[in-house]
Amino acid sequence: MTNIVQEHPSVIGKNNWKLNTFDICDKCSSQALVQVLGKIGSLYFCGHHYNKIIKNSSGYANLMGFAQNIIDEREKLIKNKAIGGIWCMSIL
Image 1 (spheres, rainbow, N blue to C red):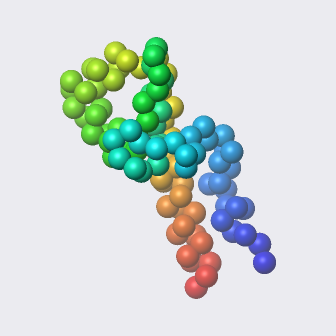
Image 2 (image 1 turned 135 degrees about the vertical axis):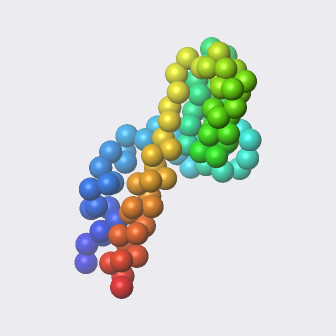
């Protein structure tokens, strides 16, 4: 029996992710999906808290003033949903 989760095309590039389960949001205990690299360190955010900050004009301005580079891996959520849906369908 093959592992459809690993063979599905949406898994391609999975090894290119920079953030992992040990990277935790600075606001809550969720897995960080965004890392904002600044001059004096890094900030980590889950998708919810990153969205909340960038939708606030002063939060966005502060974040952009701090950021030198942003690693945004919120796409993981979309890929994981697609994989989970296929896996559930294959069981039935």
